[in-house]
Length: 474
Image (cartoon, rainbow, N blue to C red; front, side):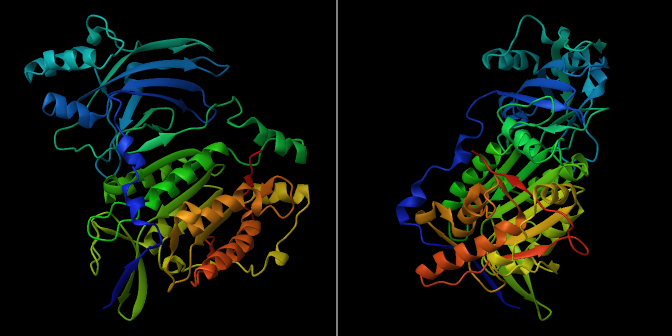
C-alpha cells in the first residue's frame, strides 16, 4: 500500500503569517442574521442569537438556546405561525430530529433548577440583547400573520442531554424547510438583497429577459465552500484562505447563497451536516456549487488508486474515517443532491482520482458550442451536473502569490468572470469555461516548468442535457 499527499505551494514563507479569515469567526458575542423561509420567501426572519458553544462556556453547560426573532409575512396570503411551529436543526450528523421550542415557563424552571437562572439573565443583558424585564414572558406569540404584518419575541430551544453542538444551526418551521444560521463554525452569507422574485441581483433577471420574455430558468443558487490551510501534521497551505474568500465574494456577486467552513471546524460531522442540509433543502429547480481546496491523498488499495481529501489532522501515510474523505464518496454525495444544476470543483493534488464517471468530450476552445439565445435558455432549463478537477490523477495542484491562491481556482474565477465568455453575451457556460480554463492553467503551469491539466467529467448517469450557466457581473 502506498500513500502520497500534497498541494504544491510556491508561496513565500512570509505568507504563512497572513491572518486567516476564520480567526474573525465569533468575535462578535452575538449574531444578527436575516433568513427567508418558504419556496417563495414567504417569511422574512431576523434572528438574534448566540453561538450555543458560547452559552455553554459562560453558563457551565446549559442546554437552553434562546433566540429573539422578528418575523414578517412577505407573501400576499395570511400565514399562521405558532410558537411550536418553529424548529432548530443541529445537523443530522449529531441528531436525527430537530429541536422544538420549550415554553418560557419551562425554560425558566429548568434554569432555576440547574442554578443557572441568574447567570442566564446576566448573559443576555451583558450581550446587549433587546432585553426588558423577564424574557421568559416575552415569547413569540401564536397566531396568523397577515400580509406585511410583523411579530417578534423570544423562542427557547433545549438541546437534549448527550447531543453535542458541533457548530451547525438551521432554523425552520413545520411548513418551511430550514435556513442555515451563521455560527463560529460556519460562515453563512447571502446576497446583499433578496427580491420578491428570489433574484438577488437585478441585472441577472434583466439579462435573462434580454434573451427571452420569461423568468430565469432556475431558482436559488447555493454554494458550499470547504478548505483546510492550517494543517496540524502536513504542510500548511496559507493561500487556501485566499481562495475561499475569493470564491465566496465572487459567488455572492452572482447571487449565490454561500456556506463556508474551514480548518479545524471542517470535521467529518461538519461535512456531513451541510451535506444532509442541502440534500433536503434543494429542489429540482435550484443550483449547487461545491468547492474544496486543500491537500489530496493518493492511496493504492487492492491494486487500485484511490484519492482522498485531507482534513486538518490528517497525517502523511494515514487514511482514517475522521481525518480524510474519499474523493469518489464526496462526489457521489453531490450526485445525489436533487439540484437541477450541479458543479463540483476540486482544487487538490491528484484530484483526477475523483473521476469515476462519464467524460465530457471537449478538447479545444474552438469546439465549444455557440448556442443562440433561445438554445442557451433551453440548455439552462435542462439538468446539467459536472465535476471540474485541478489536474489528473498523477498531478500536483499549484498555488502561488502570483495568482493570490491556487492556479486552478484563479482560472475558474477569471473564466467565469468573463475571460471564458467566447460569445461575449454576458453568460459563461460549463462548456465555454472548460476549454479556456484548461488552456490557461496549462500555459501558466508551463511558465513554472510544471504540468497541470484540468479535467472535466459529467456526473449524469448518461450525458447532461443542460448547462450550469453563470451570468457574469458587470
